[in-house]
Length: 302
Length: 297
Image 1 (tube, rainbow over the protein chains, first blue to last red):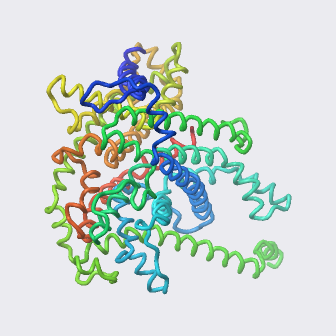
Image 2 (cartoon, rainbow over the protein chains, first blue to last red):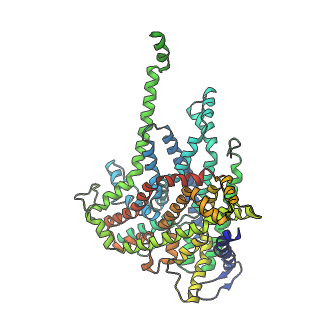
Image 3 (cartoon, each protein chain N blue to C red):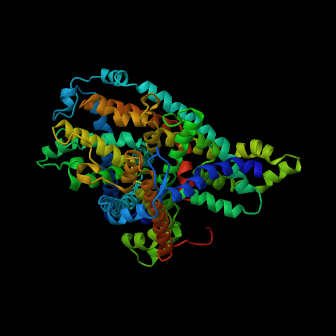
């Protein structure tokens, strides 16, 4: 047993336990990697919640992307999977089409979307122009940058969709039949049979979505840097600003990255990481506890 | 005759109902087709742009004229795309082998062996699974930087900080494999035990053979994860372009090439292509793996 477990025990000690303990220590220090860590007590935490004028925008943006993005992803994945179960022809083809974008490497997908949504020459605004609509500035407009990121996440909703599809197909047929006998219409059957039956999977998708939202980095970082480069080409800002445009895509993990690995303020980055960890656990716990009211684990099978 | 025909006649729904069903089916499918078109459109436009001249890509034209196939060649030759690919392959291969070698025994011990503290360890694995990567990243970066100074080898700037942890167990893979190992009937293992097999022998013969689909899924996820990984390469490799992987290189591609959207889209397409090829080669392992994570949780 011990022989089988030993690689993981070492891995756990070095790559999980040690960093956690070290984070706690570093978060009470000022440390720039060059000079030895200097103990500064709770100064990092006091600065975070008192003086750092970037942290609240970063928290607000992160909340926005979770509160708007996750429900949309769940709805979207659910809608597509229901559509797929109703179809009689070409289900395999459609399923593949909806799933594939989820596999697109995040950097490639973000790059592609910045081009597609390019305000001046992108295909989307060109098409909108043909319809007589003046398209928005998308990734270059503070009001539209986050919705553009949500669009990108909806395009990659395939994983959730596959899980929902399996769950919807798993709903016992006799439940629908008895509901129909009781005179339930299609919408009522959806509300009182399908939704309760797949509620564990919805919970799974929500928890996963929230956790990923709290760690949201790659797409936002790539989209912001690429879109910003584009603007500086056009004679705008020359230096990369945090969370381009105008801090609208400054998410918590991006701010953490800048503090840790651009400004090399390791102590402050460690403090931010610990707060993120605490929030992740708290939010997950709240969702799980709350879920008892709406998640039904049907039968004794589970 | 009519006695036989009548029940058949009755079973067939009236014309109005059939008509309605047909219309509903048409509506269902047209919705699906519209949604599918929306999902395909981004790739189609990326591909069309990848075939345009630079002037065209900056114009309002959506269809390339003429088709400029040489963009792909140019996209490869103007940036060290092959070097990035090689680095990515090294990262993906070494990390995936490491994850399999280290995670399979752990998953087996957690699923099929009885020992004290097993449930506690399982809980720790689940907590590790939930841990945001941002939490451990700061001390680990410090660790690799210091270790590098101590032994005189620059770990920061090399692929090793990304590969070595994979050889010491990966929580997600352990969890997924454990879920699958749980479904292996105890009788098979007991039969092998009666024949005098040790646990390691049972693992390498019986379990590995039975768990092929799950192992394939884990390997697949690991390859995909490494191919897509951006955060860790950005941290460790940024300052050393010779060790860049594809994801990092692609994110810098446009600053290397100014406004050349057509070449950037050609490179983007080249980066998406292997994933799509892998998907079609290993479709079943994919679907099985995805449902294994979600449904049997």
